[in-house]
Image (tube, one colour):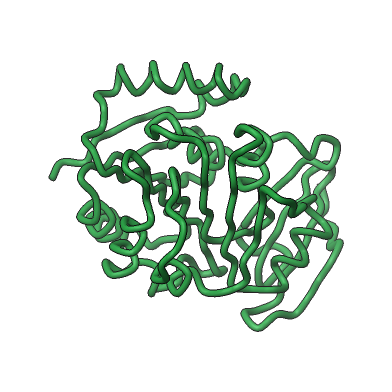
Length: 253
């Protein structure tokens, strides 16, 4: 099916494209056929067609609370909007996005709506994290350019700040994608060293994103994690969550 460019906008960090392919609307950087950054179904904006978003949501099975979530990197807003929809009405969702054009595109073409529970902060994720501020039950690190995660968001200092912004029992979730295979092991080691325990989660996806979860307490064994994930799916009324995680692998320290 041919691609149709719905919107094209220059930004301080390269051109941002909104591209339709039938019912599938995607956000891409630098070219209409650039790497997919986010996706929705136009016929069902509440659907979650991107597998890694469901796998990242599984991080909530490892938290003790559900009251506050932070997302670094907005993209098309699939994850923060999912959190806004699934979590209790008292829950707060904060998003940090460096590129103001991405924020505008997410609002205009991907159904992102701010309200008293969802707030978007335009700025650098590392600077936001380094400030004194709210602590979170779950922090998702999902910031990308077309070539991958910005270097300063891979560093130990940044991850130390991430750890400091978690509540006791909180979890940090890292989406690794667009990464040279030779660099993945170093990303895992750096992330794991910032937390008490860490695991790799994978879903069934052609894009083969790797999700890492870092916790301040020891992780449960896989059978218990699966039980917690099943309970979470029922709690959130999101049955697709149960089968989203294909593998759960603790990282040896």
